[in-house]
Length: 288
Ligand code: SF4
Image (cartoon, rainbow, N blue to C red; front, side):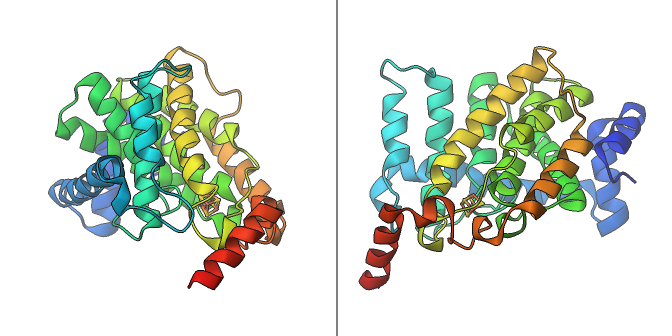
């Protein structure tokens, strides 16, 4: 049984990536591969809906602060732009899930509600780009879940404990590894992509306006999926992480512990205490 990326790499080189994950699910939770894929399919369906619902019907998915941006981004993918249509559509999908979450709609916490836009946006970007079938995408989700599991086991995915690096950073790490897997990258490249994505946002604080998971959260989901895509591309190009995934996870955990409480989901610091944010928070409270 593996507890680190290092152990996982050794085992998977012997038995295969999916086989090692499924073996652990069976040994720990008595779940057959049929059970595992049945659950993954449920997750897939929720992600498919959340990543497009707010693009199709933006008016139904307004929160207190955010709304309508997913559709704006999807429309913008048809215009001249800097990032390219793939990146812009990925951002639109991430914003969609964040808007569904802000309006109390159904999302899959992957790994948390606040960061729930990143993994689905990456998944459906890969589906579109690579023309992948559902079975391959479910395999990708299984790989992403293993990466999230390792971060949870050795650090945290909670903004209250580790800041936004632990939420959006972990989601981007899961998505980056999955993207490499879906392009048939090897296990070393998968963990390189995850490590790079996590390093890219090391130290990112959690500072939600009015304590609501809306702003700056939604835009961090949009930037989170771009982080996953560029990290995956770096790893696929053969760029390795100078520090291995396990050590990056340890570093992220230490940084999270060192963050003052004001910067860990309390809305007592960062963007949450700017004068505009305080005005917004007062208005939201008085409207209720
Ligand atoms: S800012 Fe905080 S609440 Fe918002 S996504 Fe990041 S960790 Fe979650």
